[in-house]
Picture (cartoon, rainbow, N blue to C red):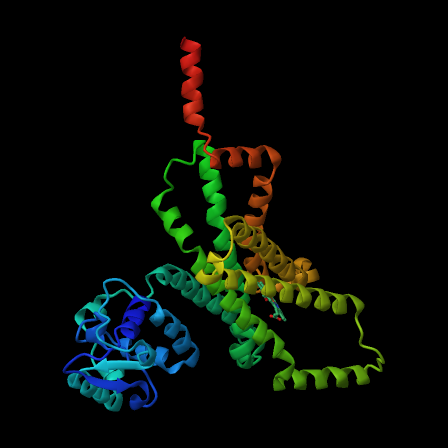
Amino acid sequence: MDGCRRRGWKEGGRDDGQAEVWASDLQGRVWAAPARLGISPCPEPGDLNRGRKFGSSVMESRMDQDEVQKPEPGRNTGNHNDSNTDFQVTYTHEEVAFFHLHQTHHFDEFEYPSDQYCKQDLFPKWHLPLKIASIASLLIFIYTFLRDVVHPFVTTNENTFYKIPILVINKVLPVVSITLLALVYLPGILAAGFQLHYGTKYKRFPQWLNGWMLSRKQLGLLSFFFASMHACYSLCYPMRRSYRYKLLNWAYQQVKQKKENAWIEHDVWRMEIYVSLGILGLALLAILAVTSIPSVSHSLTWREFHCIQSKMGYLALLLCTIHALVFAWNKWVDVNQFVWYTPPTFMIAIFLPIIVLLCKSVLLLPCLRKKIQKIRCGWDANTEMNKTQMTSRL
Ligand code: HEM
């Protein structure tokens, strides 16, 4: 569209038989004429909107003005005066009528799109990550619902359905988030294992691993999205009415027991540490998400990008795993956590991240790290072997 926009601006001149339209004539907006821009006479939905958007911004007008003043070879400059063409675009009567019609009837928003538009795949790179996130969310929701809501209802007839909107959801969100984050780094480890096994970087990865590697950005962004939601849900805990009633009940129990101080030192430390680690983890995930925006990543060197996405990513995974571990604290040795013989969600949550972190630590061992570096620099075990075989034969 950029190229089109520029052409649209630059071709604005007076031609014989054409009506001259000032930007202000169309409610102060400058329109990009499809016919002039080389767009099909029946524009795709959104083309007009884009033209409208770009025309409405003074900053953009100024920027494009500068571009207009640069002469371009092979362009139809016509017989116009450069000084007054900057804000001036010419259209035929039909074009003007067409735009007025669009403006009054909002065709681009409500008309049926062209066949070609219907055939376009919607967010193709997001299909697999979204499927994984949806399936994981559903499974963990059912699991938590059975453990936290159905189990107390069946065993002690306790009604805890109020937990569904916040407490149950806030178990699903962090578990899915940390699992997705682990899934971002798992294919890299598998790829390193693959390269170590074959002793070369020139052998193609299997198709499934290739597809998985290509989905890492989307998996990471989804992980960030789930983590942000988890942070919002967690921070609103004290606002809930159920929490306030519980607090009042605890206070009453304390008075009944004639206890003056309810302070439990280790619990205080536990909470301070895990919330702080959660905030740090989320901050790192935010940096990773920002640096995955193409305009930002293009401004970084390969080394800077790799440093942020790999090292900082592993650090985020480590912080989030410790966050979950500290949250669990002494619940690890509490048998009551095993409801209907099922492990608590925090154990499920950290299972994959711990595997990923352990594998990464193994790969960081000097002997393996050096070999991987060599392979990635082009060293090939197979050609080395052939060379030694040749020399021994000679
Ligand atoms: C501002 C940042 C964060 C805050 C305030 C926060 C807070 C919390 C809280 C209050 C809990 C306990 C939930 C409960 O009682 O059920 C918790 C658990 C947890 N959080 Fe976070 N968290 C943050 C960021 C993160 C991030 C970035 C991750 C990972 C991507 C994460 C993963 C977990 C996990 C796995 C659990 C255990 C869930 C369970 O099984 O019950 N948290 N967090």
